[in-house]
Image 1 (cartoon, rainbow, N blue to C red):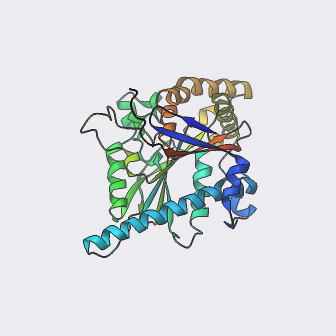
Image 2: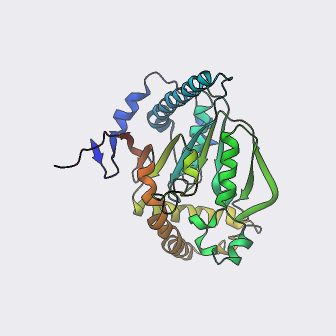
Image 3: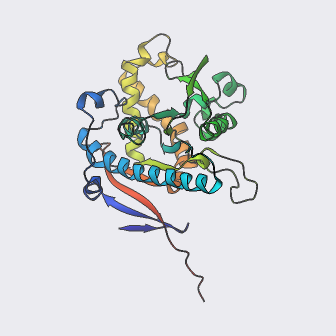
Length: 323
């Protein structure tokens, strides 16, 4: 089945079974022990899902990576210079609680086992949030995670360095302190593939239809993935994760959310629902949901967190105007 859109693009929609058949002979090299280290909090994924969803996706990605590298070699040959393909950059977007982190980590692990691209790095855009002190000064703490809460120029410079083959330096974020870690950085040195994961990585530039629009993160992507699910499921998963954190990370005195550790289950549920309604849901509707149609592939999840459908975008020929 194909879903037409006004953008001149369409998505070919695959059932999980039909998508799984596209794996062909791609081997499953992950074990259950490997997968246990990659799962996020309340983000279940099974080896069966890796085999049926992730392996066909990595096969498609491998074909894209090979094609891009070949194009670079052809261009360099034309210019009479040594060939040096730039890193292939993949964006992974979607709502809070959609399971982006687990998908991105599993994708990195599986892609790194292809001989053509052993060095696969993962960047989460949390490190490019403005420090809490800056957000407080600008009155943006209640809009943390919205597009305006990120240091976009710094993230664009990072991706420019990656694509140019230079060492790229990223700040480090702590989910425990809920803030940038002062003085900590990570160096990304010439990866074959870079996966960039974040809720707003597919955001277009404001007034992007106008000439002179600014450079944005998605301009650096060679391929992009959106993790999609129903709003009710996303809220339920968020509340479930909040309850788990109340019993684990929030118990640590140094946790930014330690004040919630003593909440009863009813109080914790009410607080999580409030945060969802006032912050995450607003961000989803205002900023995230509309970027889904910019993705190359959409992984559509069902209520159990398992991917049920895969949508693959393809370009359509221009439609001639009506006489």
